[in-house]
Image 1 (cartoon, rainbow, N blue to C red):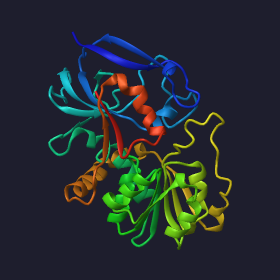
Image 2: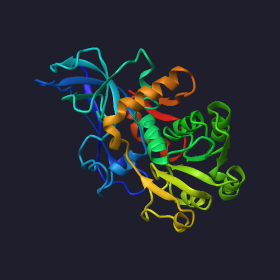
Image 3: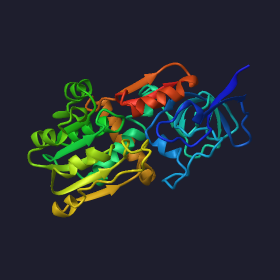
Image 4: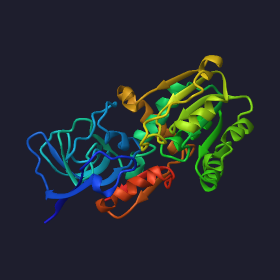
Length: 333
């Protein structure tokens, strides 16, 4: 008989999540009630924001409660349905949690066509990562052709899409990533004009070299020292897009803000935070555009799919914070 294996939050982490912060449980596979359906989860989306959901403080979504199944997006197959809008055999995306099976009433669940692209692509380039990149770049960053766009965590799930979209839009694109191999990949495989290694210790000098006229749009997924370095290179009228701050999520001393924020005043620049769900009513617009670019080859998806099932969740999540993934990190169940 199949069981529903789950990972629940056992404690609020201090720093990087450790094994004692998780509780592994096995329950009976649930049955859907009237107006519900049962999903067998096949792929889990692993995202840096998951770390912020473990904290007790206010965020853009409520924190995961102690004892609750860890929140996570996923793609799976409907195996039993008592819902008029979903049928057995369909592939669906939703926030199903870190578990093998989930019951849903259909709210915020989308049917995906895996004949168009493999399922993991709908967690990355054709999913939340791509949607975040699309609206963050075009609505918040508002780049113009010929301008310089700099992207931090450029080899991550969002950054690797942002850079390609900026190139499609006619911009000069500089990526910031960790390690020479990631930098090489961004330039040689994904068309970035340049990539700089923040681990090399020369970030400000490298940005001056590769953005000699300043940064027009800085799409930030990292925060901390990387954000400070970008602030020092802003062009007049620059736009900073705050998408994330992965360097701060596991800090035991609290988040650290940029000391040189006055560059926003000097350069007449702006810094704006956003969350992809702000644009929920426009998701179809983003997906249609992204799918078109994937279809014509100008946008290349990149997924880092880790096999091994749900038991691999705790250690696979840590890959995000060690910078070990390129593209979208996905756990195959």
